[in-house]
Length: 277
Image (cartoon, rainbow, N blue to C red; front, side, top):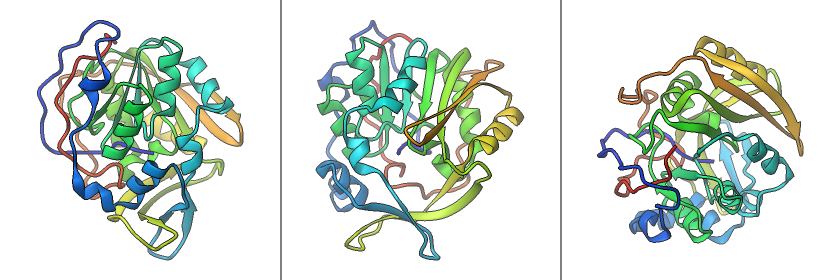
């Protein structure tokens, strides 16, 4: 779970040849305040429990152990469907980025959590500490973008996120998103990350969508549904962009300054070469 909005600008990246992004090139800079964050602490240890908590006390368990493990069968089915160079939005601890790299695929993970990017890089995966709403390498040229582990909820505004994803993908590019198993769910909530000790992160807006809700938002945003499936108790949908939107245009982030602990605005690391999308 990871990547939301930031308001500052970064210079465009030069795109290089496959393999141009090395481990040293994408390692994030140190950022001491993240050491007290419950999400960052869970990623460093690879263990929960960790939850999203609403003001009314409702808790959603977060699958930290699964996120920090190797890609499972459901993940591999997602990766099998990927086309071209892959952008993993909210890559978290990097299991999908690492798995794609082992397959020899061109991939980049982005996440604004220092702990997430650090763990991804240690697995050997190229990653940048960056928000999806920041300028990104290869805009308008990615073959596939991923919103897995609930990341369709980034920023609490699915329409704004879908619009941004269309800017990042090449014309006709593929978006694969994971949805919640409850088909009728379409909610916007204020939540914060908490652990078993009661440590909390900053409150932020989040969205939770079942597949029908995602498809409704996608149709309004100009996407075409090309697949739906379930695997390992998880639900997925594949969308294809109908039209290309200028990669040079500025994405408008959701109207909020508070986002998930792995989504909070952070100074990005410098742009680095990544495989050509």
